[in-house]
Image (cartoon, rainbow, N blue to C red; front, side):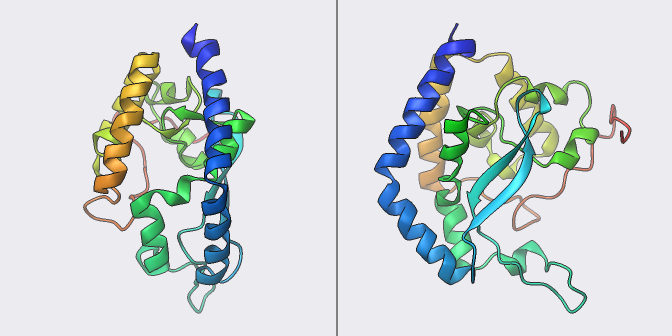
Length: 208
């Protein structure tokens, strides 16, 4: 009952209250985003949600659109300026996702929504991470976040989809507060953000 009904109701009201309480901060970050990102402060990108249904994720932009002479975007570590690093370190860039939760695209807790192009690279077990709505935070985020390997991260995601309970969600939410305050696992060991997932060596699906 919790997974199919109560969870969604709680998500809606908590996200609504969160947006109301954080509205002054929301406005301030919009203004700062216009200044430090030289334009649109929002980052909008298509992501797969529950049952792989595509939706538009909304975040505060943490990387600039700086390009090289050929018009190609510069590497992440170059485009991630000091303001963007602050947003990511404090997870303030995630605040607009409360809108996605209100719309029903996301939940407060669930596997993080990743890139659409990854859909063809998951093996059958990893695809189960889309059995539930993606979350603002998740089981993998409180067990290493971007410091995990992709395979470990997906294993934690799938575990969550099979163990969705109110108590589990509360524990993850509390652990998330600790993770944000200590800035754990914001980046991987070899990248400013997270390396692209190219598929697991065994069981990778062919491109559709």
